[in-house]
Image (cartoon, rainbow, N blue to C red; front, side, top):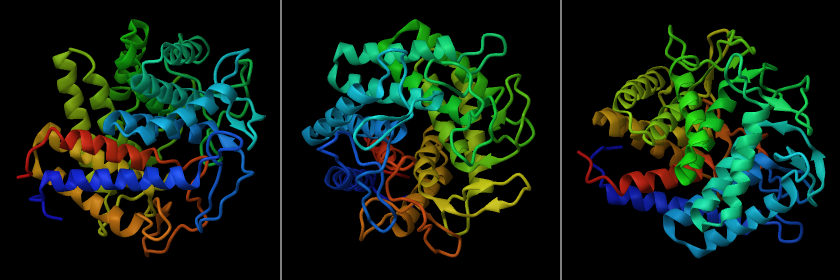
Length: 404
């Protein structure tokens, strides 16, 4: 796609897509009988009303509707955000031991009470966004309480960083994995990235200095500890003393981190650090473009342990790459990055957006076939990556003039 496209047109397309996405979720996934949102819809559009409800999905929905309502002023989005908040507040928060549960059944009863730090982070992220929308002081109090539980139980004062998971009483557990595909290691880049994302929004809305200190610590870890000095990619799995346990590369996380770190550092008035972060973000964007993009315009999923490329095109790396490459253009003013953002948006519209069924498909293989065994909506698929792409791009495009 030509980089001469009018910014106002792209902004209009992003707003239209946001409305399509959130309209779909409002129409198909709201559980008005038991609260929150239904736990699953499969690729073919079959709803599973008795599916378990994951905190990851429910908190991502809350974040998206709250952020969209704040961005657009749309009352219907605020109503959906409140619906999501009420369910999380009433059912997911552990009133006795603190934190949020991992999984509830369709009626809101506890199925899995583990305290996954990744999940605590997403709850903070969602609550901070809802507080930013509403200004309700009790919501900020909840977010800060979750922050303090993470710092008290998960932060490692000896070696730095955050441990992955705990039992309901914050006791150690043997299986720390976020999902079956993950390595069972003490510390992971993915969890740290989403703690950083959550702390960034929490610090923005609270200006709490404890949060600011923890956020600075996380930023430093990404620019130093998580970055592979040989390849430039982010390292994913570690033991408690930061021994690297995997050489897997996630192109989506690389480009996602590039813009999230940029946003986090912008909260602090430290020009030298911001300059270093700019170079770091541009390095990740260039590596992602050089190694991760496929000839069809989409972003490959991963580079596996054996060096082979997983050429599946999952929905979420495409969305993160649109923001990440646009962020790289804002940092560098290199038209090259603008063109990549447009190309990814074009790929999404042609290959990932589900024109007939609504929302986006999980992804496609290199040969164009659909990953039809994966869900349309579920524990790992909410309107978060694609909704956030729209929200971020609307905001960024409002500060831009015509593309050159």
